[in-house]
Image (cartoon, rainbow, N blue to C red; front, side, top):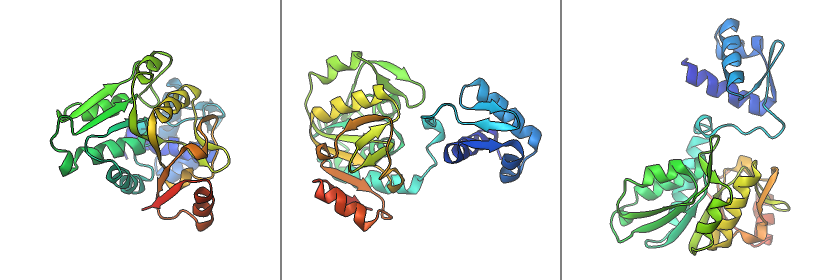
Length: 259
């Protein structure tokens, strides 16, 4: 197993459990305890975990796994969700995309749609995510608008008041939100309040709002609220979503598309 693969697995285990012992991690990854100690030390230097005697714990109570280590989690579900979201977008529309792994997959699904291969523009994409802008900028038929702001290394998203000037001057047909939590009572939420603020502005500028989230995000809460459930028009999620969850979202006015 490569170092990057080990680090990704260790960080995912930390997110799930909150704490890992060296011996426990070594057994699960089938490597030596010395290798795990070295991995923990190097990850601690990058402030991605907190070293403890004999192991490690997550970095802070609202720990957020950096985007580059989240791409493999629920990957097939996210790709199915992304295609379904992309199918909701019509040629010529102005689309807002927040940052995140699922919205990145939405951008990729839009990029390969044959009916968006040409146009002037075929699609206008407004995003605060540097990685999404980078992937789509090579497609000349897409008009890419990037908000201002300061980049967050965890998510590649631009945040802060510099984005307000751009978002205050535009109108969107649809905003696609990637969220870490979506609860019927508490609404859509993110870990970081600055990201939530930008995402909220995208929602306010859009005629309709689509939340793209796998079922592991549903019924969960996170620190920073993006918007109320009633502000969301459509939730696109994966098939394991329960009937009761679908019913409760429907009662709140949200159409649920399970793929």
